[in-house]
Length: 98
Image (cartoon, rainbow, N blue to C red; front, side, top):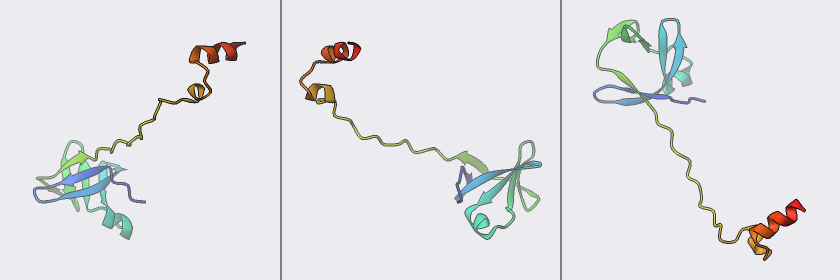
């Protein structure tokens, strides 16, 4: 499954990509390349910048894709199991320790 980690950003586009470690840096894999099982056109070399099919290019950057926080449902604590039994929390602790 293709799991993008970054956006490859140019002046006109933002393309979801996955970074793949390579000998000289990272290959920048698009979903189309992943589906076709083809060699990525773009790569990023830490000290040299971005390359497309081995040719240096300018005007590109990578942005991490932020993770969406998990939405949790609120829990109603007004009637916990111990309160439902009519036993106070302290009584429940005392009984558990006995």
